Image (cartoon, rainbow, N blue to C red; front, side, top):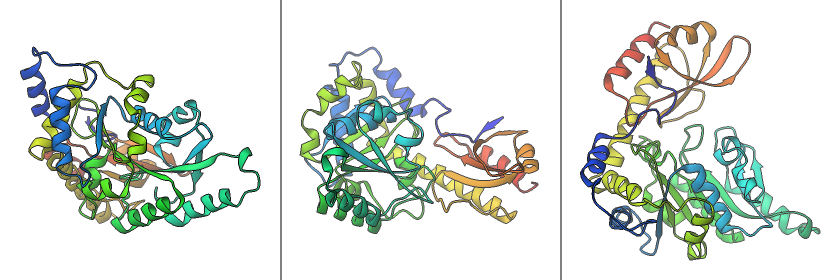
Length: 344
C-alpha cells in the first residue's frame, strides 16, 4: 500500500539522519543555547528581512501555536481564526486551554480577508460593553491553509495593514510552509513573511525533519519573555540541539525548498490526472494537498492500493478526499497512482 493520506508518515530525509548519526556522540549545551540552534538560526536569517528576529525551535506545531498565542496575549484578549484553522479544528482546544478565546471567521477556501478582520475589530471598538467581551488582539492564518490554498502577497499586505491599523498581531502558522513556498503559483517568500507578520513558524515535522518547528518572532513585544513561556508550556527541549541540527541541515544548501517543491510538482501531476478523468479539484490548491470528491466506487477502487484521507462525507455516495504528497513521495508512487486514476 502506498500512503497519500498525510505528509508525516515517513521518518526524515536521509541527510538529516546522516547528520544526527555523525554528531550523535558529541555534547552540546542544553535548551536551545547550542551551536546547532545558532547555526540553524543563521541559515534561516539569510532568507529573512529581519535582522532582529528571535528564532526558537520547538518539537511540534500545536505546541508552537499555543505557546505563541499564550505568550503574546493578555488573559482577556482573543485570536481571530478562519473556521477551518488548525488551532480550532485540530488541536483539541489547546489554545482555549491556555485561557484564550478563538473567534471564528467564515471561509470557503481556508483564507480570511482584511475586511473580515476590520468588521470584527470595529465591532469591538464600538461596543458599549467591552469589559464583558474579549478583545481581538491577534489574527491567525496558515500558510498554506488547511485546504491547500495560498495567500497572495497582496492579500498578506492587506492583512498586515489592517492589523497595523488596529494594533493586532498577525501570526502565520507555517507547519506546511515548505509546500506553500514550493507551489508554482506562490508569489510570497520568507522575506515577505518576515516583513508582513509579527510571528510565523517554519514547519519541519511535515517537511523533511524527524520533528520540529522553527518559531520566528519578529515583533519585539512578543520576543519579551518568550523563552520563559516556552518553558512554562513544555516547549523548551533539553536536547534542543537535535532540532537545531535538523533545521541547519534543511536550510544550509536549500534542501528544504528543493524537497518540498518536488512534492508540489508531484501533487500537480496527480491533480491533472484527476482532471483528465473529469474529477475537478474541490479547492484550487497548488500545494501538496489535493482535494477531490470521489464516488464510493472510485474510492473503493483506489483504496485497494493507496491510503487516502476521508476529509468529509458529502452524501451517501460521495466523499471529499484529501490526496497528499510529501518530501518522501517517490516518482514511482506517483506514477502508480496516476496510472490507477486513469482507470477510475
